[in-house]
Length: 70
Image 1: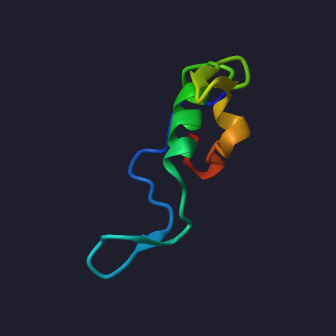
Image 2: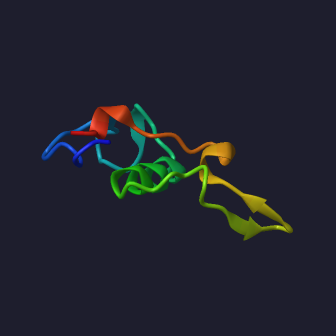
């Protein structure tokens, strides 16, 4: 279990006006999974009921961003 995220660390790059990511694009699902990881929660044990079935974040494309962990 990691102790948190790296302070002041930047991953990837954006376009010249900072509107869109152009390198190392991560979806918002990855942010949710890494927050659960930092809090010590197992994302495979947490599920939500959506569109008639239970879904787990890591099964719908979420993954821990290891470059952010401290």
